[in-house]
Image 1 (cartoon, rainbow, N blue to C red):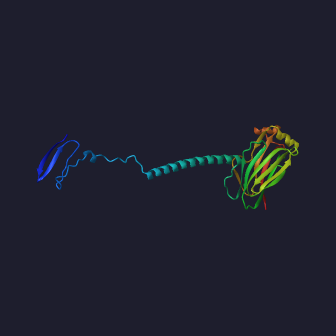
Image 2: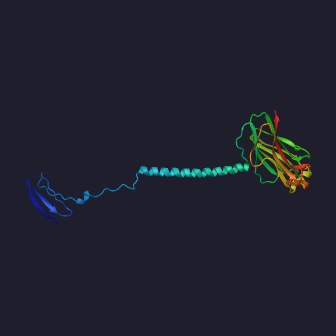
Image 3: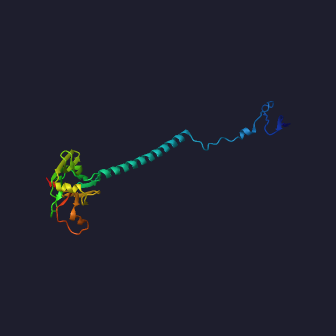
Length: 263
């Protein structure tokens, strides 16, 4: 309930009320105008805060940034996985890193098959030499070079060379064979082994290997490269392991050498 009073002011009547929720006003221009009721709390109500709100553009920008970050993470993980697979593939097949144009390179690749030797060799283009791969199983007594059985051509570029000792299913004879794969196709060459050599390869003996291993080897053009030199130690030859005396007999083994021939 409100109390009111009227006071004369310059010929105009004003009414005042005492209360908590209502005010009464009159206008000099219209003294007969009915009072206007106003809510005092409506003018003092605070505006809604914008803190913690995002616009549509900000939301789209945030989604785009998150997508870019996730995309980069996925790409990095895939790249690392691909690099690991590539390293494993290079290790399995043999990888030749880039070299100068005046050198020959070779590396030995892993092989799980007994008496099966795999190499990757590279001969540069435009050299004054033709290269061939000579192979044998016999190093005669007192000599430093094996008695080469045959040779197969190695073309410029990279080649995958396989030297294998195994029984030929076509005639049931043990042979040493050489297979060369390159951009021009596949070439093969084989030689039947003597019975004495076959008996040694079919038995278990110690072996000394001094050829190309799992690390890449390079040599200047014009020099021979012994890529395979595995010697079987039979009987007294096994003393080589302790260095008691030099071998003074024929040495049976698996030999392969990359040889240059001047044009």
